[in-house]
Image 1 (cartoon, helix red, strand yellow):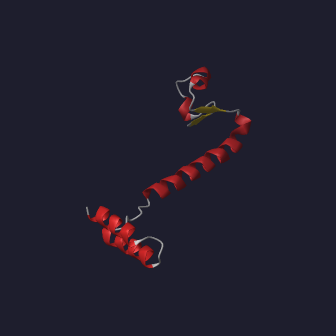
Image 2 (cartoon, helix red, strand yellow; image 1 turned 180 degrees about the vertical axis):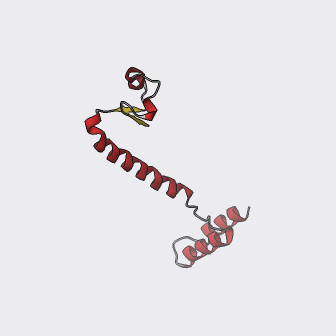
Image 3 (cartoon, rainbow, N blue to C red; image 1 turned 45 degrees about the horizontal axis):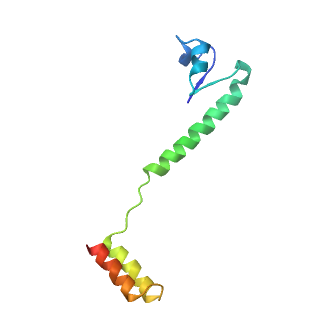
Length: 93
């Protein structure tokens, strides 16, 4: 998304009509600039938060961890021995 106002660096060499044809451009009046600055900041904050979530890696469970989890489910009576053994076979290949 581009936020362009008359006289901004992004508008150099482009007419307002060119910008209006671009679906990624938001145009506004100069008097609305403070409101759009706030909107731009909210968008950037949201984007940064989303990028932070994407870059946070979640460690996948190891096969041993998976087997332990399923053994606990079996021991608690949530899954049967047959279900546990099938999952164990699947995990161990």
